[in-house]
Image (cartoon, rainbow over all chains, first blue to last red; front, side, top):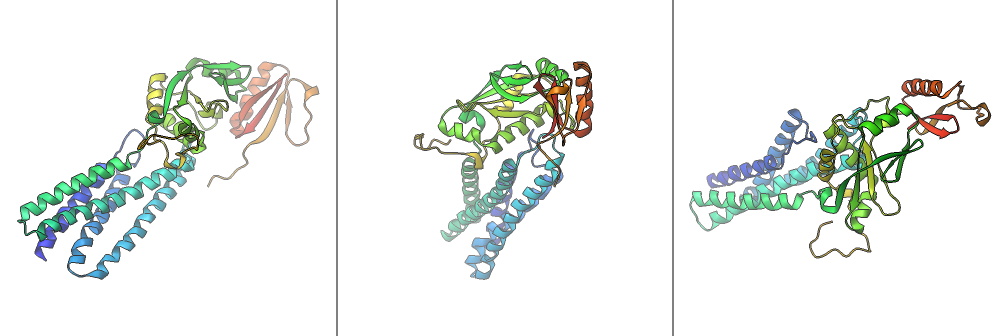
Length: 305
Length: 64
């Protein structure tokens, strides 16, 4: 029994490390910190505990303990619900909303990360247990557990890696023009801007981009409204937007060119710099729910689109 | 939940009386395009709507 405690401790640590490894607080400001980070780390600790206890409890013939894993799955489905609800609640306070697809994507990611922690903890406990069965000394058990844990952690991270927009499309700076009141970016009509003052601001400070999909799959993905909403949101929060609630004229809108599927967007950032905008758009994640596989395309083996 | 009316026309501001007749949406008649711009801006600020230009001296304010 004493040996099993070593397995639990080491795999618990590995699971926890996996959670920290997947925790990224970046310019998108998600998860929120410090409170959001703490609650996710704590949930990660619980997940890690569950994963590391599964094997030792089986080894001790405590079969009822394993049923707790079912409870855990329920618990982490709640994590997704929790995230979704909280993001839905703050949605009205965003100048440029995230959109339901993006919210769902974030919620799903947090749920998946907890499962990743459970799997990492479980695999590293299996590593230690196997070493124990071969009558290896404790040091070897610990080392095996750590190595197996790190490998599974990295493999899972690779597996959970998000596709970025730059992998499926090319982003280029574009030109803003007006045809009467119609705001156009590279000859695609975006919206009707009635006020002359707003048109002047657009021409003076506005920047625009065109997103050109690389293949039919990317084309279909970019057609997804949720994906475009995510692009608008990311651009607005990372560049800062010159807009207030009573100025709907300056809302960034990503419109699709129906002829070729290219997406264009114009916005007025606080600090005008089209290269930064291109950079931000390039690094926008492709939403899992927006990913499409069309019948026309036959991607190569292993190609992720 | 944010509940409200969306995508509806809130007001019409026009310099051209002959082109607009409405029994549901308020119509504001103005003298010239300068006044039209100003009044449209005021209404859009109050209603949080957006000003659209329909041409020939007709502006509409729409809540999106």
